[in-house]
Amino acid sequence: MDTPRVAAPTASAVGRFFSGAGLLLRGLGLYARNPRLMLLGILPALITGALFLAAFATLAYFVDDLAALVTPFADDWSATARNLVRVMAGLALLGIGGLVGVLTFTAVTLVVGDPFYEKISERVEQRYGGTPGEVEVPFWSSLRRSVADSLRLVAISVLIGLPLFAAGFIPVVGQTVVPVVGAVVGGWFLALELVGAPFYRRGMRLPDRRQVLRADLPTSLGFGVAVFVCFLIPLGAVLIMPAAVAGAALLTRRLLGQPVQEVHP
Image (cartoon, rainbow, N blue to C red; front, side, top):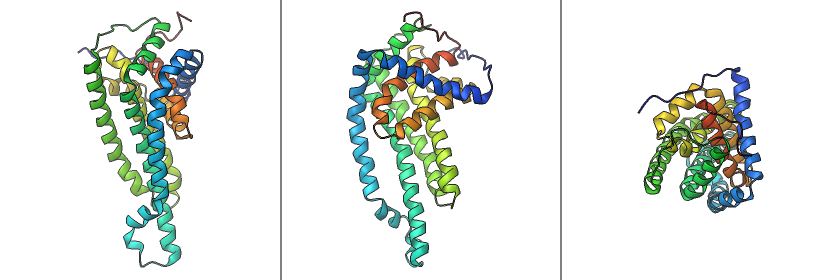
């Protein structure tokens, strides 16, 4: 396969970051103006969201017991020191649970709703002039690749999440720097997952996605972090997921230097 053509960034890094975040807003606008897109996208996210909300609620319910389980070294400490370290452990567990939960939610929802989100992504691209160099990808082949790539991304995110969990025990840093790093890491993996469909239509796989997104990292992170933050809001993942798919189509076009002005309003 030829090396993907990547658009050369022109604005400052900060400007590109906010421009990337703005693509989610544009996706939300497209989604809100098209009731059919809303109906196509909300059902898979609603089903998956209910399951993941129940899982996170279970984690929150048992977080005190889990915090004690992972801090046996504190059993003989004074009550104040023991409670402090276990509060930090609990916060770290909830943080890593949220990070992995958001990424896994996206992966599972994209697989469950693959036909729906593929249709949303296609319709968005049609409004902007279609998909240059479109490749016909059979449904089962696309689904198999999507599952394999999503599993790979989730596995990597868990491996990165483990040191973040450990860093959560560090006073102050664990409650300030670590959440920011978690949002950046989560945003990167979300962006990689969400652009899967438009990249597949161009015959491009996961390594191509990494290369293209890294070429304009601020824009990619701006989009991904905006999605990540919205997904942390109660019911945000369910309501925003179709808009994120639409925004990911726009992100793909921008990063590849393709038009992002509507020709079919």
